[in-house]
Length: 144
Image (cartoon, rainbow, N blue to C red; front, top):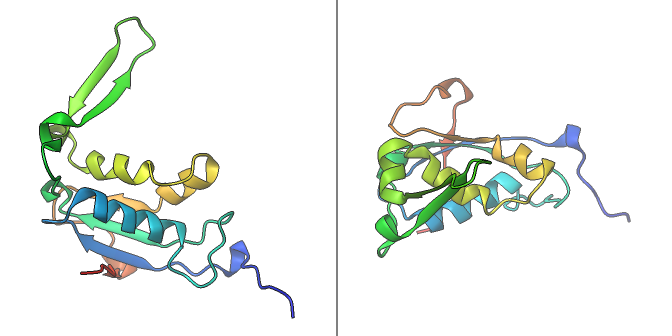
């Protein structure tokens, strides 16, 4: 008997929705990254994108523990001298609240074309509304 390897054409993708209101950033990000990669499926292949789509609503109400609200920084820079920018979680929450979860999940996915394809299946919205009702997303499977 030969080992079965899933092919790209055989992948079935589901849609999940999660309400991030009151959830902790790191714990939610690890679970989302796992589902985006497809590790929850029996036919997981590390070289293939066989994960599911995830829609996150209420990203502005996500929690961070400890003093991360003021002590955690997001770094960006321009190619010019002195172009370093440091933004705290509180500043990011005021300006782009969906990017807090986006950066957390992005750091947990593989680098390269595979990780970029997996990250495209993550849809994050700051408020409770989203435009993906036609896909009929199921509730996200979270552990208690």
